[in-house]
Structure formats: C-alpha cells, structure tokens
Amino acid sequence: MLFYITDDDEAVRSMLAQIIEDEDLGEVAGEAEDGSLLDGHMLTLKNIDILLIDLLMPDQDGIETIRRIKPSFTGKIIMISQVESKEMIGEAYSLGIEYYITKPINRIEVSMIIRKVIEQTRVEKSIQDIYRSFNTMLKLDNQQDRQKKSFNEQQIRTSGQFLLAELGIAGEKGSKDLLDMLDYLYQYEQEQTLKNGIPALKEIFLHVVQQRLGKVAAESEVKKEVKASEQRVRRAIYQSLNHFASLGLTDFSNWKFENYASKFFDFTSVRKKMTELENGSASSTSLAGINTKKFIQVLYFEAKRVQLES
Image (cartoon, rainbow, N blue to C red; front, side):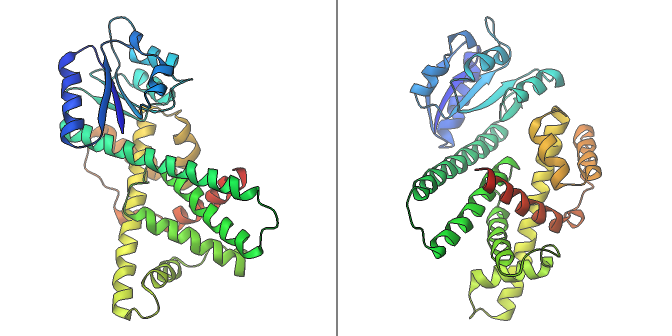
C-alpha cells in the first residue's frame, strides 16, 4: 500500500511514517505540510492508496482540501486531528473519509485503523477485478445453463463481499461463514424457493459446516465447528453494530448509517449502543442479544438487490 501524509506538524508526520514502516503496513510515497500543496491528479499518478490528512492546517484545512481533491482522487482518506467537534467530524465523514482519529497519536489505534482500511481496500479491488471478469464473460455468446448458474452463484458471493465491506466487517473471521451462507441460501432458493422465508438458523449453520468439512467428518467434529461458526458470525454482527453506532454517533445523517443500520438491526439496539459509546459505559449488549437470523436474511436479500443492479 502507498501512503501520503499531510500535516503541518513535522513530528506527527514522522511518527505516522514510523508506524507505517515499523508495522510493515506499506510505504510512504510522499508528505506535505499543508493541504494547499495537494493535488488530486498528482495523488492518482503516484498510485496513492491511503491519504492521512490533518484537519487544521495554516493555509488550507483538511475538509477544504478533501472537497477540492475528491473528484480526482479515489483512494481512501483517514483524518487525524485534535479537534473533537461533532459537526466538523460529521462534515468530514460526509465528504467520504473512512475514519477520524483524534490526537494525540495512539500507535495501536493508528495501526489497527490502517489495517482495517487496507483490508477494505483489498476487498474492494478484488470485487472490481471480479466484476471486470464477469463483464468479459457476459460478452461471450451461447452460455451453457450450468455456466450461467455458476456465474450467478459467484455474483451473489461477490455482492456479499461488497456488502460486508459496507457493513465494516469484511476483515472479520465470521465474514467467510456469512459468504458461505449466501451460497447455500442461493442454492436453496433455486431448488425450493423462499416463499416461507429462509430455512431455520440451525439448518443453515449445519449445512454450511457439512459442506465445508465433507461427508466423512465425525458428528462431534461437525457439532464443534457449528458452535464455532455461530460464535464467529455473532461476533462479526456485533462488530457491525458497533460500526454503525459509531457512524451514527458522529453523523446521524451519514448515508451508510441511514441506508443500512435500520435494515440490519433493530433501532433500539443501535440507539442503545450509541448511548453506551457516547457515555463511555461498559457494553450491556451481549452477543446473545444479536438477531442473527434477521441479519443473515437481510444480507441475502440485499446481496440479491446489489446483484441485480450490477
């Protein structure tokens, strides 16, 4: 990954570059001490993947800089600042930044957030590559029925990958379990339809695990993996709840928050988590309170919608 750092404090630039180098996150391809020195076309020509930018700078602040370079720069943006104004942070998110990190710099926080953005970037690039491949395939004439079915199955998984990135859990361990479930539900719908809704949650987990382990797997091994899969999925869903609560707390009108939070979660759960984050209180939302079946059902129908729109 290629990084570009913009901050009027040389010590901060040096610290960020050191974290990127020490954690083997990528390479710093350039630095600037003010937003006025940035050019979107220049960043694109340098193949910059992630721009780290300060909010307050002498000549041109981070928000104005992002507004100016955004049309031509399509990389990810992480904003770093000591300012904690919800209005300014909300405006930054509305312009398309991925994360907002509050100074003073915390090495662990910066490393964790950069890794998340890197993972999201890689997922999105993979999805783009897959769609390009699909578009090429679509140009071929006389597709066989079996090939068309395989293509559609792959599309539902690709759509699922896109949604998991939107939900902030593309890098979670449970993401693969969720994608396998989309495959199963697609096959199930082709064979039996979903007039009565999706199958029971227990059946979904069992089928996915049996497909993964094979027919020769012992019953004890299957039960153990089903339990582990359930835990991974619940944790991933809980992380998504945290993700949207954070977005909503920062900017209630954030388009991702408005579009997804109410679809995938009960509003009371989201509101409760927002209150916990705002007060800095210990979490009272347990994994057991997560509505796993609702999340999986919405994920499947949303993946189908994305598939049809692509």
